[in-house]
Amino acid sequence: MLAAASFAGLCLVATAGCGAKGGGADATAACGPVQREVLDPRSIQHVLPNAPTPTYLTDPPTSGPHQPSPPIHGVQTSAIPKPVQVGLLEGGNVLVQYRALSDRSLTTVRSLAGTKVVVAPNPDLRDGRVVLTSWLYKQTCSSVDVRAAHRFVSEHANRGPDHPNG
Image 1: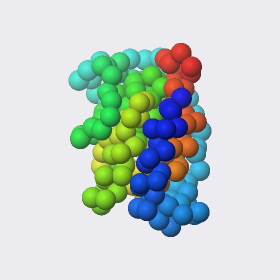
Image 2: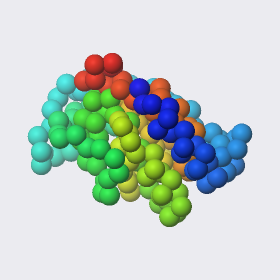
Image 3: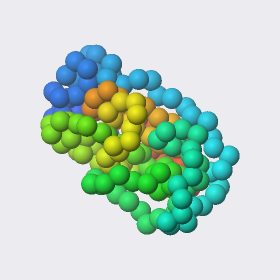
Image 4: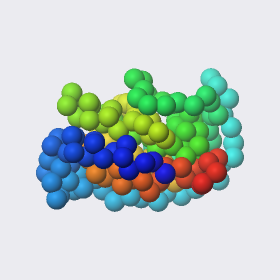
């Protein structure tokens, strides 16, 4: 699991700009409930680089055809293709994707990157401005919510089928 210390400073520093009520008691109101999504039976299929993007049962995907690729870490500056997203989740990573954030919120969401947490833009997100995904789980947020992100990572990092603890 992700060490609690890696988020401890974030919660103290970043909560002023997070959540629906600025990080107070109602901060989690910025995020909907964590949803367990259906396992795509095609999850054992590999997608070759430059192949057409398959369709997925969920958006963003939490399982399905995937592209094994070199590890991706930290903050990414461009959107991650869906087959690569699924490959990251299969390895036990949590993916934090965002769209249309203010500079302050963008700084906060990028600060979430760390061990087993990849942060990337996704201009195609339909619901919410921030979406956290792991293998079979998703949480959608209307704004950056550090407490909810911490909880999601603590519960879902290192849980992919290709991770020894998964």
